[in-house]
Image (tube, rainbow, N blue to C red):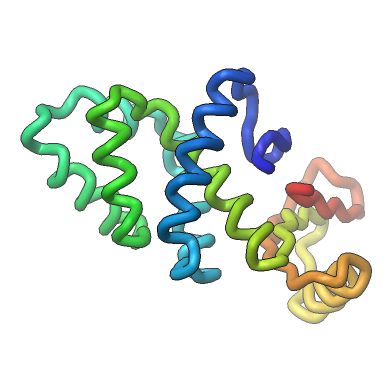
Length: 168
């Protein structure tokens, strides 16, 4: 579910299993209340962590009594679902803070699977117009028979091309 290169990077097998177990347990309890907006907020948090791993170090080394304060700041900064706070505190107590981005990636994939949606990263050069994006998304939705969530960005390394990459 979350082993794709687009999501999981170089996660080793043991880390993957552990991250997936945490994500599955969490999603079984709280996943029904997740929305597309929660998906985008988690995606934003994962990107921030990937860009600056010191966020995890700060969480890991903070005093135990300050767990809920640090978690609250993290949740508020990325506008994350409040129930994620329970998971983050648990991971801090179990000294598994470094698994947070992988667990969040698994939660993203579980959300997509359970809501019967696909996520695509669209890359193009030059930048696509809104109508071109709409046409591509309609095509992808028609072919996949699923609702499509997407992020579009300009990639100058593509010479007058388009790349649509999915997590499946």
